[in-house]
Length: 144
Image (cartoon, rainbow, N blue to C red; front, side, top):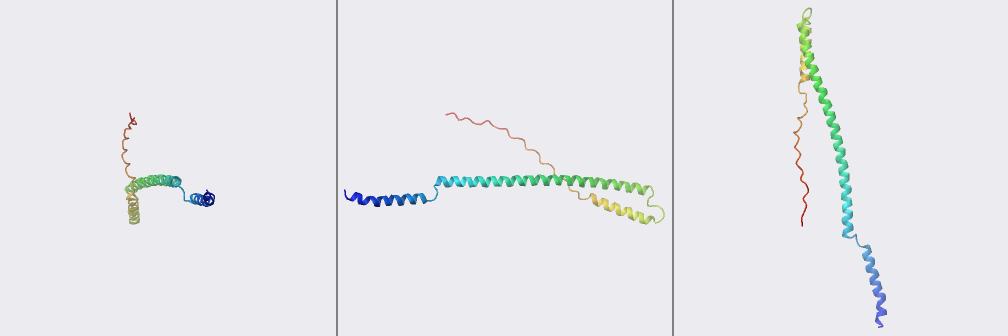
């Protein structure tokens, strides 16, 4: 029985040391997975924000492209109308008379310019055919 009181301080010291080691141990697996999940959720949220920003930029760029194509199409139509006016002007005698070659040169140059204005006007791509919506199935109910 005398041994027990002498061993008691050493047992207390061992218990205290093991408690201190346990408290300073790295986080438990459950805490680590929870922290990892929170980190992934934060990363997913950041990526979703970036994706929304890129979608907004793409929509703005698409709107600008559509406006540009409308403008270019109007320019092409204006060029066609001017070519018709040049032809009519020549038929009415614009290039006849004194120094008529200079006016023919002017008309030829204007025709060349406005013909080139119509060439290569970009067209928007044809819209992709809409995919039909797949029918939705009701959720299965497990019967046990």
